[in-house]
Length: 115
Length: 113
Image (cartoon, rainbow over the protein chains, first blue to last red):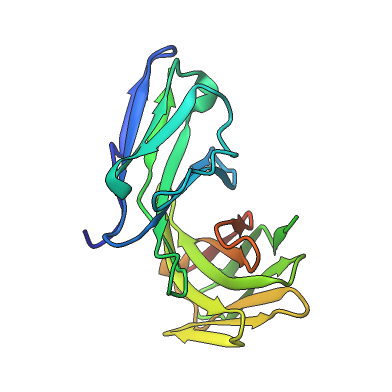
């Protein structure tokens, strides 16, 4: 697609439920990043995928968070047993990391509210 | 570890003024620096990307400069408009850890009509 696409744009869930957030990166971008932005805060790195390499999961805040990237394209971020502190905007970004200037492009984000 | 700082955290100016936003970083071994704009409730929009070998980049009323040795970048906005009101973030990409981006916490700009 023309840009990074994220869905859903808004998700309201009850505490304890699982949620899945989806990211469709720009076609041809091998690198995909997930960030979290809590209200009024900066960007918090969560996880990074590069091609077929093992992902960098160093930013995941707990084992309730996981992500996968199928076929080197679409990625899904899963949060199990959601807590109120998980409420935030989850941003996905992609980049063409090889043979390019490495510009980073973001999606519009998925706003998660845990009641 | 790289640290990126943006000062001021907030800025309010009257329409028509030229203004400068600042971004500083502690480790000069960067690959590139990127400026973004974020509107409330939205994602980040890329404004300008400066490679480490470049001194500046221009797009319309925006001009970004980079002084790698001193660890500084500025974003100059000419003839500001109310539509420029947003949060502006800078991010650096490391030379030796290409996959990592380090973000500043942003400058929230308000341009008053």
